[in-house]
Length: 200
Length: 200
Image (cartoon, rainbow over the protein chains, first blue to last red):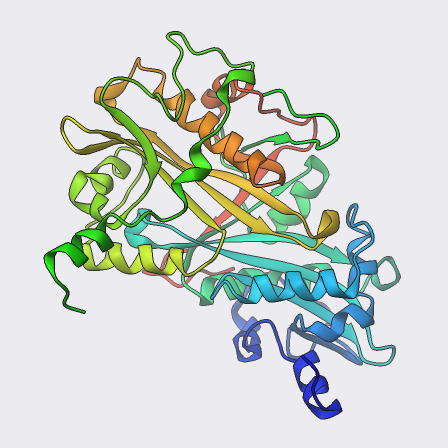
C-alpha cells in the first residue's frame, strides 16, 4: 500500500506493543545495577523500546545472527513476520535496545505471553531470544533486558515466567531470581529437518 | 448475542482450529502402537479433535484438574479464554480425545506455535498441558495425543518442537523421539505470587 512519506514514516516507527508498558518500577528489585540503570534510563544515548518496522534498517536481523542462525531475511519477510506477530493480540513483546548515536539495535529480548485454561485461565510468560551485541558488553545490558522482560511479565499478570537455557547460563539466571526446580527442570526437543523427512 | 437453538449449537461445536489438520499419516512413524491406533482411529468410541466451546460441558476443565491446579472456571471464563485463543491466528491447537459413549473429554494436549525471526522467520512448536484421564490409562492415549501434537507441529513446518518436563517423564519422551541435549537442557522459572508482591 503506497502512502505519503509522512504516512510511511509513521507506519515504520509504529511499535509492536504499547511502549507505556515499559514504565516499570526497577526501584524495588533485588538485582542491583551499578551504575543504576533501568528501562527508562538504560545508559547514555540508549533507549529501551518495543520493536518497530524500521528496526530492519537498524541492524535488528544482524544482531539476532549473533544469537543463532538467522539466514537471509528480506525486508519483506521481516515485515510479514512483524505483521503476523502484531495480529496476535497481547502475545509478542519483542523488545530492543537502541543506541541513538548510531541508530543501531544493540540488544533484544522477547516476552511471549501464552494463554492457558489452567490456574483459572491464567497467562504464562516465556523469555526468549535474549541477545546483546558483542560491542556492548560490560554495560549491564543483558541483565537490563532480562529484568525488563521479567518485570513486564509480572506486570501483565503472568503466573510465572520460564526460560530454557544451557548449563553455563544457569548462574546468570539464578542471580536474577530464576530457579531450577529439583527433579523438574528438563527441556526436551525434536528438531525437524526438511531436507530429509523426519522419521518420528 | 442471542441466537436460535441451531445457531447456538453450531457455535458451541465450532472447532478451535481446522480439524482437517488432524489427518496425519501415522504409518511412517517409529513409535509403534499395539494395537495400532492413530488420530483418525484412536480406539472404540473415541475421537481426536480440536477443542470446541461445548467441551466445557463435557468435562474438559475437570480433566485439566487431574494435571494441575485449575481452580473454579465458570463457563463464561472458559468461553472468554477460548475466544482470546481463537483470536490469535495459527497459534493455539488445543486437542482433545472424547469418549463418545459418555460425551466426555478423556485426554488433551496443546500445541502452541510460536513465531520467530530467527531461522528465516520460522515457527517453533511447544507441547503443553498433556493429560489423560486416570480412568483411561493403558489405552496408549498418552502416546497417541503426544504423537498427534508432534506430527501436527511437523506438518505446520515448525523447525522444532520442545517441551519441559520432570525427570520421571524423560524415559517416556525419549521413547517418542524427544532428546535431552547434553549441557543444554535446563528449564528455569520465576513464579509470581499476587498475594505478596514478588520481590525480584
